[in-house]
Length: 253
Image (cartoon, rainbow, N blue to C red; front, side, top):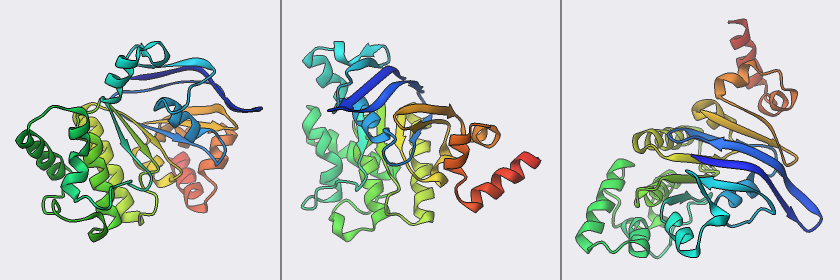
């Protein structure tokens, strides 16, 4: 569980996060959504320790990040997996080498132990025949699965995903969403996803945090979105006619 208490973050005279408090639950897909400039990327980077809030605390299963020693922060980082927006694979490395990179960085495992772990996670993301391929030789969806495999290779307690469906077609996006959710439940990870994809929200939104102008405007599940009377979240989610019709049908029962 990650707990955020009254977090404020400014850049110069501009306050981006304004007293945000929330909990990201273990074993669930937690989504941060909001319009551009709402503060969702700043919140994600604050969770990752890239930004330090001026006010408030962020704690990981009771460990307040700003109160940790340098060694404790390094230990915490080994418990974190990250899926970047553009996958961020190393072009000159094979799929297997990309996935194994965190193992070389953070463990003292033997070569055979690393290979067993690489084989395991690539099988888990349904990439059993891609070990020797370069990123340029596989599709965008496969690259994203490699990024997920790399993110979970060290058995993280916390998984962060920044726009994991960016640049993917709708069918591939659904596959990636389902894969992230399956892994979250299977390994009981605290997963936090920064997303603008409303299909993802409706597909896997177990705990949704909606930011607007730096404030937490609303929080709930994908089911509760259909019933809420909060005008801001309704306007944001149901800006397309498709979602408006879905909501109307749901409310009619």
